[in-house]
Image (cartoon, rainbow, N blue to C red; front, top):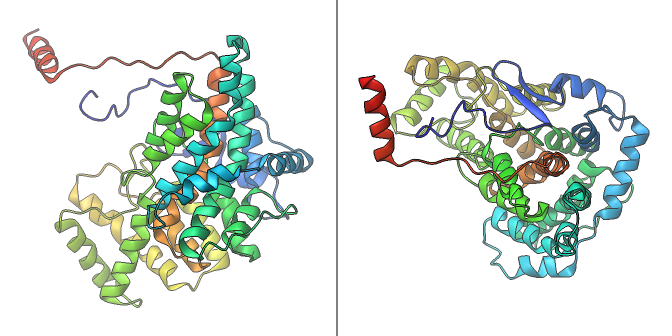
Length: 400
């Protein structure tokens, strides 16, 4: 555990979600299919509204449509980003990675932290959760504006689109990015909902909790989480999947046979690389987040060439990874599908995809930060050891 990335260690309290190796993620006890069925949507049989999941994570209860509409309005009211935030982003080169620009914007938002002001005035520990709640909701409300600013700055000549007061959280985010189709709005609602939380042990969630345990406010905590999310082994993977799939098409064409695909997969593996989008640190079966995206694709884009290729990969890759014998989970994860959906509806800039993940993850991390303060959870301080200590420990254990 000490030198293996603390895999399998139980050391965190995370109220908002729980990850089962076989069932996948449960949000407050509800599976993804159950959330799709129970959480309010814009229309019957539509995708769940992210605001509904936020309500569920915060309260543990499934909200009514009226409650979700009220929360949507509150988030719209809180979505006010000061000019200095945009100026901080503009100080960076346009070529800076989207996650660098996004994290910079979130750090600049910290100037308005209610928790920092309350702490400096000597607020009681029993009330820490109250300004944390204020910061968390304001942060969740503002990140789509910051994220869309980065997108339009980088890819659309800085032509920014204001928020639409008639739209919900996911629909508005899609709108501000520049997409008007109902299907893209629905995709964004689904995307934000299923990417919002994945218990507390992953890099971004754990980072947010760790930094928050020092009583850093939600802005500082979430900015730190974003820097973890930007890593190739965490959130950047969704970008890598689409780039790899496009490399398959570039080399083999869209009408690739199963045998050709097997050869390309082996070529990737024999080159010392991984097939992005397959495997997971906890899951031991196909990620339910992958499956609900597959269902969305079957409903809205069954004939998309890249979707067909993803479907082929679902059949080809797991047996090969199983044959290798080095992988505990050969099945596709959430990243294996999201890029293809986004690409189909026109969001083709793969470097930006992790920012979408970041906007989504604000809902889970900020919800848990509120509960961290409400429960009075302490500063996180695990014990570390040296390699010499570990070697001596093993020698003593062997001798005994």
